[in-house]
Structures are given as C-alpha cells and as structure tokens.
Amino acid sequence: EMAMLDVMSGGRLIAGFPLGTSMDTIFGYGQVPATLREKYQEAHDLVMKAWKEREPFSFNGKFTQLRYVNIWPRPYQQPHPPIWVPGSGSLETWDWTIKNDYVYCYLSYSGYKVGKTILDGFWDEMERKGKEFNPYHAGFLQLVAVSENDEQAQEYKDSIEYFFKKSLHIPAGYANPPGYRTVKTNANAASATTMQSRSKQLSDFTWTDYLEAGNVIVGSPETVVKELTHAIKELRVGNLMLLLQFGDMPKELAMKNTTLFANEVMPHIKDIWSEYETRWWPEKLTKAAQRVNR
Image (cartoon, rainbow, N blue to C red):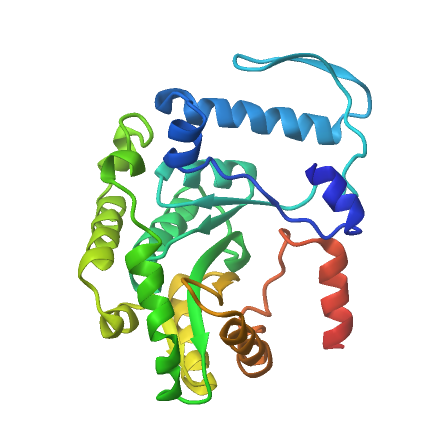
C-alpha cells in the first residue's frame, strides 16, 4: 500500500515505521510485549526486501513465512522512500534509527522543554557511535497556535485544555505493560522523567502551565516565530511536525491557525538549517523547493 501511494503521489511518500503504542499493538491486536520489537524488525526487513528485490522471493522469518513475495507496483522512489521512525523515548529506537540511517521522530505531547532531554540523549548516542551531526536526522512533534496578537491567542485555551485533559487519558498499565519497554529504557532517567511529566501535565496543569512548560507554543506570529526558533535550535531538529488542530478545535479556528502559520511564521523558520542537506526527504519535493528558493 505504501508503494502504491508513492506511485500515485509521484514520489512524494515519506514512509513511517512506528513500533506502535502498547494500546493498539498489544491490547488491540494481542501481540506479546516481549517479542513485539523483534517482530517489528523482522517485518521491516520483509518490507525493505519486497521494495528492493526485482524477482519473486520466499521469506522464512521467525514470525512470518511467505512462499512467494512479489509486490506490484514497486515504489516510485528507488531504492525506497525516505523512512522516518516515530519514538517516545525508547533507547532501542535510537539504536535502530541510527543503525539504519533513518530519521528519529520524537512524538511528545509534553512540549519541547521536556523533549530536549530525550533529543539530547539521541544526539549524544549519535556522537558515541561516531555519526556526523545533521539536524535532519531527527524530528519533533509540537503543538502550535497562532493568532493576531498574544491576547487574542486566548481563543485556543479551551481546545488546548480539552486536548490534554480529555484526549490523552491512558491508564498506566495500558501505556507501559511489562515487556513493552526494555529494562534498559525503564532504567533510563530521561525516559522516566518524561513519563512522570506527562502524567502531571494531564492531571494538574492549567492553561498558563501548558504555555510555560512549552506543551504548546501560542501567541502572535512574532511570539511564535521567536519561541519556535528557540525550540528548533535547542532540540537541534530539522524536521518539525506540527499539530495545528487539536482537541475540539472547530474547523474555522483550525483553518485560521494553519493559514497564519503558513503565511506569517513558516517563512521565518524554514531556512534555519539551510547549511545542511537532507537525505531523508522525497527527492522530487527537495528539487521543487530548490527551484522555488532560486
């Protein structure tokens, strides 16, 4: 299906390879927590081989056995689309993305100030493994809300509080069942701090707390540009994944937020890492952006 999407879009696909949350993979689909990552890695190997092989082949894995594998169509982008791997702080995901030269995308609703601990750990691991720094090797998820001025930005208050207080309730046993995270990750101070922070933010935070903690970057275009630029440089990320609609935000407000961001914020931040090249972006889109910049 991803290969078909890549063909239909003319080579614009970024392939996401998430391990999956425990709620869907374990409790929804009945997978064994302790073998989930091993099964995921085997599935990755199958997909990659199917994308690259020119002839039919058999696959005899530990979890999956297929007599004939011969997909059609093949991806438009060769040998395969760029691959981004979402993570929430597992050390094994750092190792996996670094080993395979994929983008590590930290998905955190805790905001960039808490997220810095995890991204610092990722960059430290990159350095330990002797990898060259490139901000496009990582991405970060951030909630952003733009209004005409800082006072007017109060219009997002209800949607933000709805999102954090009503949309993210996950009992601890479902979020981290035994075996889902390894002993190594559970013992990591950064991961533990992040999980504790999430729990506190869901139960105790107010609108002002969310802003001060960086859960959401809110304000006039000038305010958002300033804080978002600071966040990008602090995290050292070249790929910013934005949530511009969240909670019960009505369509009109979401469209306003998206339009203001595109017109008043994005032009000021898109070239922050212009001295670096990315290997993890669809080639056709990269060439199109270069033509626009010229």
